[in-house]
Image (cartoon, rainbow, N blue to C red; front, side, top):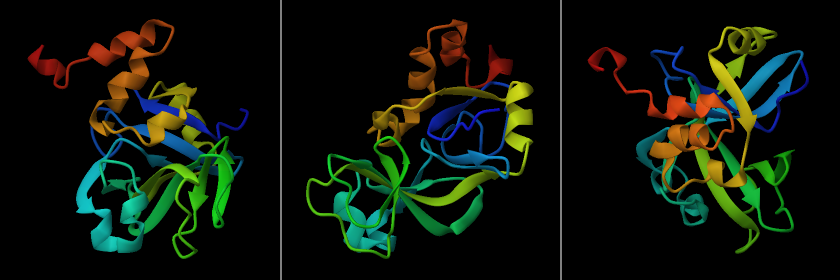
Length: 181
């Protein structure tokens, strides 16, 4: 399988519970050694200024931490979408999206189009993600810069599904509790 780096994984209704239920994951890395990404639609109640006060003014609304995944929830990872010229401490992941060094200098005003800070990340071992995709747990779709910094992350799962060209867009109407249907 070709690298899926820079794409989005959208959880299908086959994932019925756990941290990936109705999740949208931006893949930061994917190769023969496995895959790494962050869940972009799981805002937490913790505000960025409680953990990284210097960075709070650069974060897009909602100005909170996001649960990036179930791995290393005690560590922070930041994704930035560059406006034109990348700031110091920015490492490209895909297109205009890259990791920001939270120990580095703050980007200058206007260098970033958007910024999100994640607690933890999602990870898959060699072949694990490919197997989950083959079993129908994930849709692989193109990422749009705005997805990563959506002001309404709670609707992102449905929004990403609705814009697909094929019949999977109808999964956006899948009820929260199918047993109550």
